[in-house]
Amino acid sequence: MIKLIKKMINIVLLFILVMLVITGCGGGGNSGGARKEIVFANAGWESNMFHNAVAGLIGEQVFGYTWTEVPGTTAVMHEGLLAGEVDVHMECWTDNIPPYKSDLEAGKFQELSINFDDNYQGIYVPRYVIEGDAERGIEASAPDLKYVWDLKDYPELFPDDEEPGKGRMYGAIPGWEIDEIMHNKYLHYGLDETFIYFRPGSDPALQTAIISAYEKGEPVAAYYWEPTWLLGTLDMVLLEDEPFAEDLYFDGKCEAPAVTVTVGVSNKFADDENNADFVEFLRNYTTSSALTSEGLAFMQETGTEDYEEAAKWFLAEHDELLDTWLSPDDAKTMKSFLGK
Amino acid sequence: MDWLYNFPFQLPINLGAVDDVVRAFSIKYASFFDVIRNTLAFLVNVIFYALNKIPWFIIILLVFVAGWRLSGRINNGLLYSVLLLFVGSVGFWNLMNETLSIIIASVIISLLLGFPLGILVSASDRADAIIRPLLDTMQTMPVFVYLIPALLFFGLGKPPAVIATTIYAIVPIIRLTNHGIRQIDEEVVEAALAFGSTNMQALIKVKIPQALPTIMTGVNQTLMMAISMVVTTSMIGATGLGMEVLIGVQRIQIGRGLLSGTAIVIIAVVLDRLTQGLVRRTEVKSDG
Image 1 (spheres, rainbow over the protein chains, first blue to last red):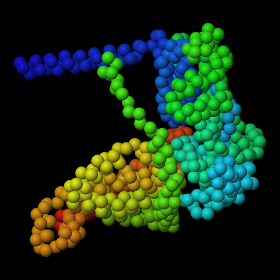
Image 2 (tube, rainbow over the protein chains, first blue to last red; image 1 turned 180 degrees about the vertical axis):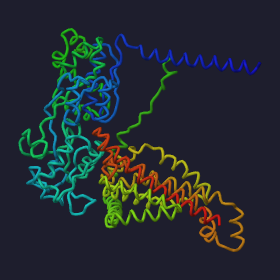
Image 3 (cartoon, chains in turn red, orange; image 1 turned 60 degrees about the horizontal axis):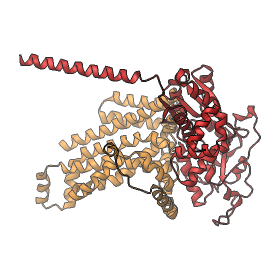
Image 4 (cartoon, rainbow over the protein chains, first blue to last red; image 1 turned 120 degrees about the horizontal axis):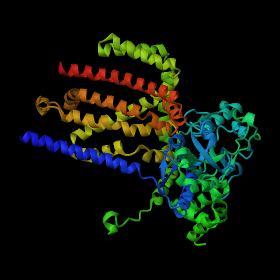
């Protein structure tokens, strides 16, 4: 008898548990309807987070969303966008996402606008290597260094500690398409005779390599790109290359063109009627490399780590952007929030 | 009521100052860290050079013989050599040597430091109390937290990879040496001392042989830990199979990632079985 009661109790408990799980899930699944949360992709670099904060702030103040970020690598973020787990990707570096074009053509996600396409990338060296720095007491160690292929003559300036006698140039992040192009360039200009093409593995590693060399006043030759706080803060020179030509580019025989950086949204987000006005705003969202650097430099100078604060400052400083991005009424709402 | 659910205060910690101190430190003692970096680079290079100089079929033959003798079954030897043959035939032989040179260098350093440290810890309860939380920290601290400062000090590439791997892989050899010596029957040690052996003699002739199976398990675990760091260290520029995995994963080239991942698994399995064979042999010996 007691056993039977115990069994009954167990069954009832199990039933309650199952009901809880079902209703719990149901509650989560039905939470659509009105404004919800926008999930931005955070591929890991500053300008990405900055644009997220700018768009997020507007989404919050004008359209009544809340917003959050999901961190991950470029590839993971792109997959998230396709799967609808990421709603908006403010900075799709189209050249660094190999399947970008084919996925776009297949309609797996939507491209809303070009965020900016006036950026630089390539092999940088600190300015003191070429011109010296009287203030820090650094003499110019390679005054004739101007073009990428000039590097070939200076292996001893950029020593590689794994292969004595050779120089080291830091390439791009493995997996980015530009990495392959940079490697082709390295072969094309015969840099392989005197240099090692060193893949830094990740962006923090590459940054650390550049910064620690820069602070010690040592020469360093590394791939990097703008707009970044790194190149906004350090005085680096982009080594020149042959002018851009499309058919030479992939073989690394010419300079890298500006990468088109787009705003992408998932189909799930774009197809939702409720998001129509926010999507319309993103369609108008364009900035420039210089504008982005301005925002990042503000953060570096004031020492703040609050991207939202930077976004507020940026939008107040450039409130003309709001007129092109938003309808007059919405622009007014936003401006009054910014205290204009 | 907000303070009930949100923490009511926050200490004003100046994290920027920590950054500055670490950076200043790395610049001030740059020459010191350069010595360490060059030594490590030299060690890795020597091992890599040696591995590359051994013809591939000799290595496969050695693995075959070792697999056979250690397990006592010829099938095992065959299996391991076929697995290695696969790694070579998909074009990963040199990458494997590169990866192995990092692993071997880290294991050598781990054993050189970890084994004496384990003995030391086993002799003193106080040392044990101090070292234990340290070891816990080393095993659980997210790798990138100390990897990035390691880059400031040692640059990118194989030297910081060896350091990061050692920090992670040294833990089991210390723990298991300590554990192995502590679990020896006290009467055995007492008997040795009663027969007039010094503490040193008791350690070398009685304690260590008695603890050898456990210590060898520590060696095996250290090796496995070192292998598990291969992909992580590729994120700071360590070349080899880990870099292949990284590139494959970053580009969503599933095949490339899978193939190089499989090669790492093969290396791990072969090394694991061989060292476990060693463990078993020591067990047999110390029993008899």
